[in-house]
Every structure is written in C-alpha cells, then in structure tokens.
Amino acid sequence: MDNPTLYKFNLEIYPIKIWIAYKTDKAFITGCFFEDDNFAELEGEHDAITFFNVKSQPDQKRYGIMVYFNETNINTIAHEVSHVVDGICHCCRLEHDSKEPNEHIAYLQGYLMEKFVTQINRFKTTEQWQHQK
Image 1 (cartoon, rainbow, N blue to C red):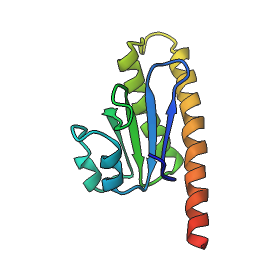
Image 2 (tube, rainbow, N blue to C red):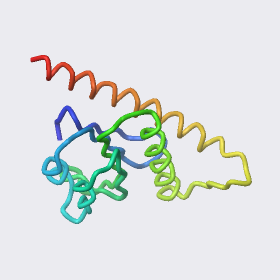
Image 3 (cartoon, rainbow, N blue to C red):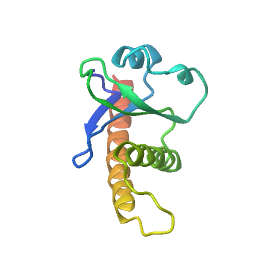
C-alpha cells in the first residue's frame, strides 16, 4: 500500500485505522482492500466519500474507515471528518448526545481535522511536484 495518494494512520486512543485517499484510481483502491468492501460509489461524481468497515489486504484482522477525496476544500474535509467521527463513535460505543457537552467529540474532531488537512496538503505538494517533472 505504498502509494503517494493513500495514507494510513492509527488513532492513538481508539482501536481503529483511518485511510485517506486522494485522487487515486478505483483499481488501486480495490487492490488495497478486500473485495467485499463496496467501492462501487467511486464510479460516481463525488467531492469526497467515506467508506466504513473497510478491511485492508495486508492486515486482514483490522477494519477501519477510508475517506476518498476528489475535492479538498475545507468544507468538504470538515464534512467527511464529521462522518469519520460518527463512525468512530459507533465502532467504539462512545456517547454522542446532543443534550450534553461532548468535549471528547470536539477534541476528536479537531485532532482529525488537523491530521486530514496536514496529509491532504502533503498530497497536494506531491501532486504539484510530480506535475513539474
């Protein structure tokens, strides 16, 4: 899975993997994950899309969340990060109550936004460098 447009990281306090994909072709994505993961939606026109319960080929026992980006403006990133937070809360059975302060959710959202924006900026820098060759 060594590709300049797919990045994997482990959450340090939650037992889940996160993959960020940026303008990567469907064949590469489907080659990195098991066939039962439904990537049919990659065929459509999306700014971004989040896939839950994906299972990587080399690490068959670990499931995670993969976010695929075609467009990476801050609104799109924040939108997808909110889906990732919901997925983590569901997977880890974390409380997500609208009637109570959700500091853990706010910190998780901030942490993920920083990770996503940093990595997407790396993707864009690599993409620009590759186009200059």
